[in-house]
Amino acid sequence: MKRVVVTGLGVISPIGKNVTTFFDSLINGKSGVRKVECFDPSDQKAQIAGEIVDFKPEEFIDKKLARKIDRYSQFAIAAAKQAFEDSGLQDTEFNRERAGVMVGSGVGGIIALEKGKDILSAKGPRRISPFLVPMLIPNMASGNVSIELDFQGVNISLCTACATGTHSIGEAFQYIKLGKMDIMAAGGSEAPITPLTLAGFAAAKALSVSNDNPQAASRPFDKMRDGFVMAEGSGILILEEYEHAKKRGAHIYGEICGYGATGDAFHMTAPHPEARGAINAMKIALAEAELDPEKVGYVNAHGTSTSLNDKYETMALKTIFKAHAEKLLISSNKSMIGHMLGAAGAVEAIATLKTLETGKVPPTINLENPDPDCDLFYVPNTAVEADLKYAISNSFGFGGHNGVLVFKKA
Image 1: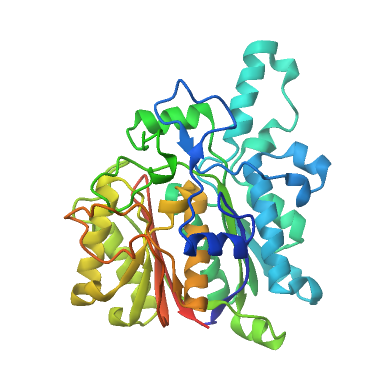
Image 2: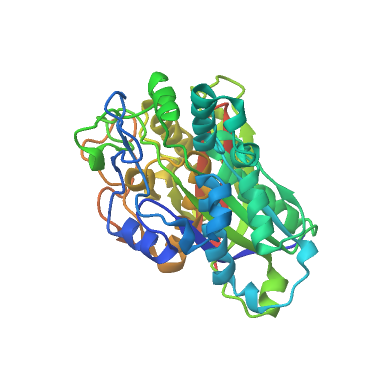
């Protein structure tokens, strides 16, 4: 089996449009949650989001192309170009037929879909754009990244709700581990801040309605939490076979050494009450890594700020790590950036790698009144420093999709 390392990172987020700004904002506890600006949310129950208000696609993408693709694809290309440049591969000869892409999305081109429906209703079918279908289908972020980077190997898009980004990285990891690919651009992208999407999640009672205090609305593990905050953005990683990376002298952020994916087989939206899917996913990931749970120092939690997820994720961590759970450093990036749905796991994987690399652990902000059912150490409100060797990143999605990655410090 081949070893798999990460050699490039790219992020578009509500708290930074590059990895340096993004991670500095995390460490400093900066929130990117605000009242929605891309449309008037005054008739919505939930009126806040992790919106990227200063994104200019022409900074990353040809203007003509930008007009033909949905915002979620724009984010993906921008993050992928960052990651590719960061990896140094643009200055290297490599076999592009052994370089693949696996970029997923939870809802795909929902902006294009809603606009298309409005045009159809107001002006009729003859006014529909010929680019509507490629704008809205959820595989086009992966397709467009493949085109932009000229990666000619496997090109697959996953859709597993909030676990999409983690699953995309995990499956890409397997392609390299099994020797099928040398390089993979992997991650997720999402631009879900639309009237319909916001209304739909609010109707499911999943969203925070703390509209008067946006930056304090996402409160993972706090007993006053009232739901997650929707967000947009993208995270793309360049995964590479270890010897391939070593031969060209690439900077290595860390190694992926385990991946677990399971299904709750329980409920469309609620996690299993015994957290069996989350437990099994962590168990599988640690087993593949051949890692004693006590060697894990940090957990980047799914930590959605919803009553059930936070409680059952805590339960799962206690089951897997037993007494060592009390010594874990655990934090939720969603307290600052909100929940990016299909991009969440990828952006959080990047944060996990940077945590290992720097020894700086981002906090869980807004944790003022800990829930008695959430009684581990979630790095409340202020970052800490620690010498870490192994970390895991958790993602759990609607439909009972669970994904876990194990990372090792370079």
